[in-house]
Image 1 (tube, rainbow, N blue to C red):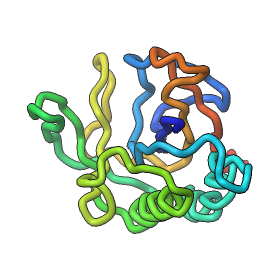
Image 2: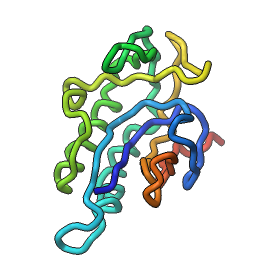
Image 3: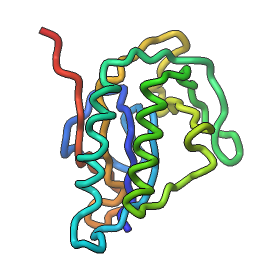
Image 4: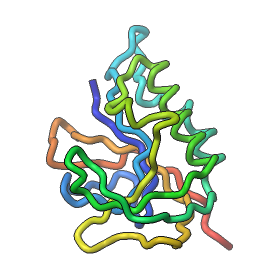
Amino acid sequence: MRNLVMVVFVEPVTEGGMFPREDWPLHITLLRFDLPRIADDGSEPLWRLVEDTTPAVCRALGAQLRVGPEAWFGRHESILVNLVEPDPRLQELHETIAGQVLALHGRIASQRHTLEAYRPHITHHDGRRRHTGQVPELDRVALVDMAPEGDHSQRRILKLWQSPPLA
């Protein structure tokens, strides 16, 4: 299985870019999951996922998200985040990805935080954060490999969907 995540980055990134496991750009996690490397028919589920989720990603691009209040997340409620207020396009994107992962015989990493229990948020990291009331645009959605070439200390952006630049 291949360990992957789809996110909305709220800081600049580039397709193919890599970063250390402990130094993520600020982001909203859409879904963490595992996919088989090869399907029974010999196809690669990863690229089927990209193809099948692209329409939902394109519908979501351009949504204006609103940063909500701070909250504590994690097993011991020790991770400071800012919630992201509910948004129908963000929720639809999350649900579409979850459905496609399951259709491709993948596993969702944390099912208790999916579908109606999805709580989008932006984790504070190394002094970087977003503040209540800010309105980041949903303009960068990425598929990230959590262990490129088996290296669990790195992350690689495999696919980046972006809003077209303003003229």
